[in-house]
Image (cartoon, rainbow, N blue to C red; front, top):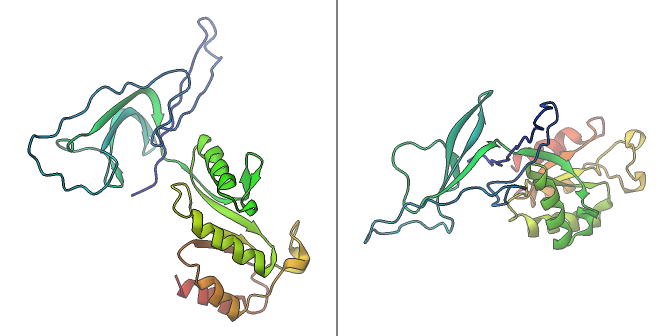
Length: 239
């Protein structure tokens, strides 16, 4: 299902000045509480005695209520989170459904960041779990539910180490796949990249990167370089 991030928006208006607002956001699907207020979580549908539990997932189904942003409109409603999917509920609820009422908070899809090097004083090139966890947490606090750790042009050895590290953290719920911002860039148009780290897109490199097809989703490459067409064909062919 679509990765969805629920965010709450609370407007606190002054009694005589309705133009003054204070917006606050909270993550709902990551079980973070809204600043300044506690959501109501009181209801739980009990299991039918003697019923056979065939579910293999650890998380209970959740029903969340609030102001849902969907199809260009905002309306009060409910969303059911069950079996790795988020959808509008129909019919009876699954057993042991946990119900959370977020009142006037907004529930909306998350942002997806395709290019991010770091955050909170950390960089993915630090290649530590502490760094990646802090980066993911910072972006999530601003509504980014999926993020692509990005590496600038760093040469062959460091690129391989970065991809190995991305494989280690690929189980994080906010991980969206690795992004290589190079090193296959034009020496004359590489911007702030280190020109000494640039490489030529060869068939050998295509084979090496194909072994990371399970965790690599983006490669920034200069199309004017020799060999880019065959390089791109091999990568896309590998999935």
